[in-house]
Image (cartoon, rainbow, N blue to C red; front, side, top):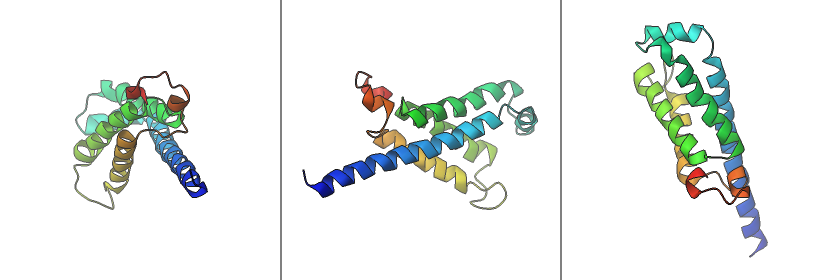
Length: 138
C-alpha cells in the first residue's frame, strides 16, 4: 500500500471521528438543556404532552454520548434522524430555511446524522476496537 493511500485512510478515519464527536457533543448539550423545567412549557405550547420531556431529552442525550464513543453509531444516528425530522416538521413546521424558526441547523444535523448512519463510525471508534460487537452496533 502506498504512503498516500495510508495517509488518505487515516484522514478519512479522523474525519469520521470528528464528525461523530461534533454531532455527539451538540446533541449532548441540547439533550441536557431539555431537562430544564422551561422545556415543559415549550412542549405544552406546541401541543406535545409534558410527560414527553424526559424521553425527548434522553433521545438526544444517550445517542449523543454513544456517537462520541463510536458505539451503536448507526442506531444512534437513526434515532437522531427521527428527532431532527420531528424538529423540522412538527416543532418548526419547515416554514423558513433561515431566520426565526429557521431549519438550516436542523438540516445540517439531519444530513450529518444520515452520513454517520450510512457510512458508520469509522475505524477510530470503540465499536471498531471491540470487534466482537455485531455489525449493527457499529
